[in-house]
Image 1 (tube, rainbow, N blue to C red):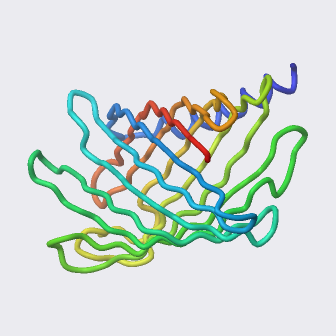
Image 2: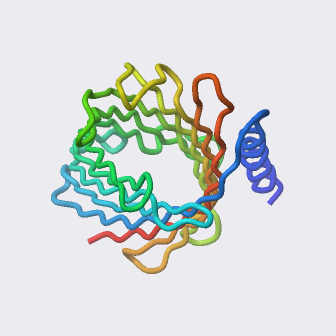
Length: 225
């Protein structure tokens, strides 16, 4: 129990430090995700998800849809490729459609510190938008720490950086563009159904203006078949 409290305290401290930058503008959000996973074979798997994002005093402003196919190289490493369609409502009914080609390498349970397991991924996205000239490349490395709780429940902490590899008309910042830190609990609802509930802190960086800090309440439902 003492180790559990220490680990939770470390996660909470890390998240709190990330959530209190100087000269920042704060915003409240709700992100809801539905994910469906399917094992095509022992080596091949597919996943699809939809994330609906809404902001305080405003209806949904972003609906991200993605589908990916992965090939398992071994029990720790899987390579993925897929497509993302992401309509963003700048000001209703004005909408910008962003498309992405996505590739990633996932590393599952590659190390352990006591009961805490380490996972991660490296994701590359090639992006373009309808009606807007230019394309853009982005790198998104992420690591994840997971701690088993009672039964099949678990507590997870993730850190993700968004690194812009070039600039375009809609990607003006080269380098670190945003950072996400999340703390959430995963609860099993059945043999093939799970629920994630947590908090995500997102910092978005701009040129010549304060960073923006989003405080996000997250819920996710995951189904496997």
